[in-house]
Amino acid sequence: MRGTLFLLLAVTLQVCGQQPAKRVSLPTFPLPSESEWLERRGFGSQDGLNPILLKALQKEFHCTRCETVGGRQINLGRLGSAAVAWDGSEGQCGATGNCPFYLLYKDETGIRLIQIDFGWTYAIMKSSTDVPDLVFMANMSYRSGGARRYSFVRGAFVQTGCDYVELNESVESAYILNPKQVTVKPCD
Image (cartoon, rainbow, N blue to C red; front, side, top):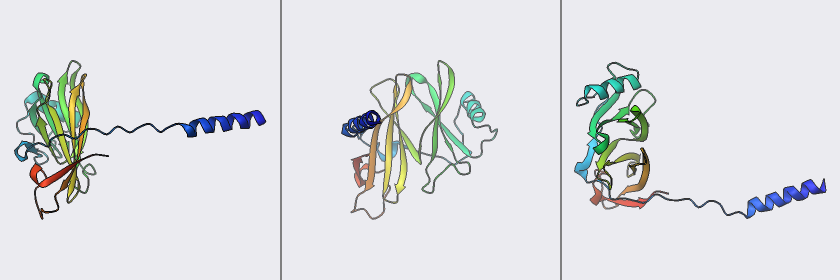
């Protein structure tokens, strides 16, 4: 019995004495200009999608007319044509207008669909590689939002940056995506 208590006490002291893992914050990044943000068109709008991407979108979302799904064709550099899609079906979008964003692109295994983020708008930014970065903006409140940057690293899109965006006090009412009217802080 004493041996068990001693072992339990030793393990407890060992665990309690350990330092917690240090949390790593993602770096901030320059926000895209107002003109670089792409509007999330209405649900049911897939204009501009090539037939292959449109067929893949219909297959992945199990719809023929896809009235609750929107999509826009984009160029992902060496990955070629891709689509950013958003799902507005019942229960998918939050009270602040944030809906799930998906990325539909072709790789060596075929056409892939991944849920990449939530938000209400997005931008395509230059990167240091031959695949552009993607940025998604989500509302957090009337005066704040969060921008997250994704880069294509070792065959997958991974989050590489995070900005907490807050409307400047001196601005009464403004478009939060104007970099001159917001303060950017690191996400915690």
